[in-house]
Length: 76
Image (cartoon, rainbow, N blue to C red; front, side, top):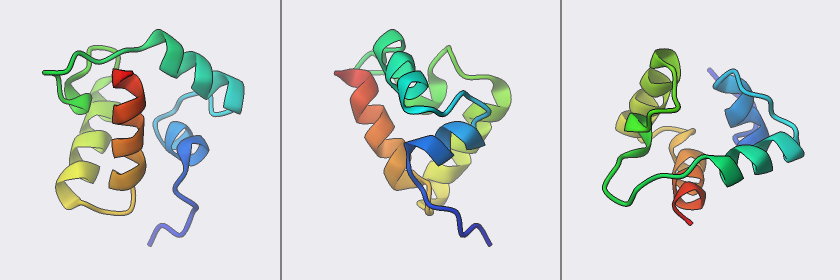
């Protein structure tokens, strides 16, 4: 059972990305989603990142809320 806090830092770490505040802000500033593209289908994810996001959203589990927040930030 995953008992880690589910925030942007831990999500980015889970995805294998740099997870300091500045790294997350840079990622959000440089990666954008079109309104008609699901977050898990974004071209900037690796296969394993895409699978993690897709599975997390399908399960509507602990990670889905923070992934939804990231989705919204990538669209603004």
